Image 1 (cartoon, rainbow, N blue to C red):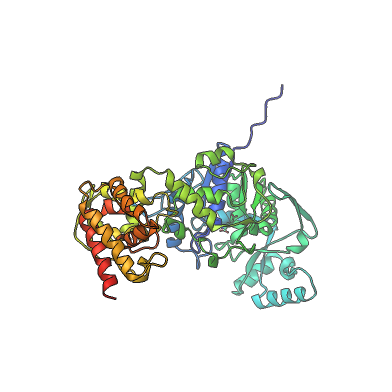
Image 2: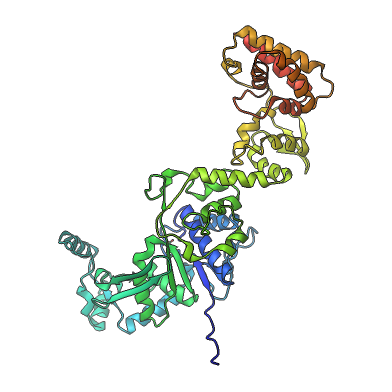
Length: 514
Ligand code: GLU
């Protein structure tokens, strides 16, 4: 028996450029690379592609690393995250292919650029930008691909050296073979074939110290032994260039999988204007990382049946590239809210309260592990009291940020609401006053101020009326100042008898004085 050929280790990478805020598409790319690596017991690598010195910033890079950490997408190799002041953020690396930041890999690129130049696979081009641009415009006007026509292709090395000595500006171009077919099998899209005539001699570096994306990407994919390049469909046109570069450098090419575009509900390419596209909107908007990941996983992937709720571990188990669709993936914010609500409902009340606390910072401040102070009233409150409030809203909460508006009523002295809100259907002022007076009377007499008891006592009165709403609506608005809220019995219990009575009296005054 011949020994089984050793399978190549699965290594994927997410290779963002820190030139702007991280978007949902980037998180999906990271996630799919992560899932594929983990599913196959492989490695997930984070590589920072910061060769564009003008547009890349440390701030964007930090945001990016922190966001990936928030989404719980842990990389096996790449910059180390550290908040410790004495260690520069991301200045250390884990993994044998370090450094993982392209701006620190200059020597590697220089070596390979020189190799391409030495072996005549690349050449210096001295054409001016204007010249090249005019040529491209002309080619487009006659319906041809706007490529570089190769004027400097035939310069000898000596001629090039001479022009460089004279201080002429130049770039380094790859010598693309004419009229060859470049084929690759995209694991999502099938066979793709491109004729080199549509590419021409493309620029790979401004000079030996300033390599450009296609070149650095190809070199690093090889040097970092990436087995699968999984990235957005917008990179399909780069793939043949990278394949040519890899071949010229004597490397094997990785497998490629290009993910479908993310579309808005009008089936147009998702843009910032569509909302919930930047990760900040997830992190600060009250979405849970696990719910966001669940939602993002479904952007172009499905398990082959109609299941939609998956933990990260379940995603790892279920994920496969074959189940990624070719067609654009439609982004539906309502689905995100629905999934998030589902995850919020699964939280224990302790966990949920802890998650809500940061969204209440306008109203409360921590005074000890278990206590808070209400900023406006100065009252001390306990975590248990907060839990009693939050539990009333757990069922209706779709995102944590909604909690602020739902429960502010518990932290203010005075509620502000228009008189009209108290009216239930056709009630006139005297009926409202009568209704509130009834509630006041019933509630003042209650000793055991529990929600059940309050409800039982109020129902006795409400039954005498033609419509329960006549009693309960004005009371609920008096206690909350809101159109929607938890039922008044529970609100009253948490507010306590004194505040409840105060609020009803205020409501009566509001009606009387208008
Ligand atoms: N740095 C590239 C980008 O952010 C990624 C390219 C790739 O994945 O090959 O678009």
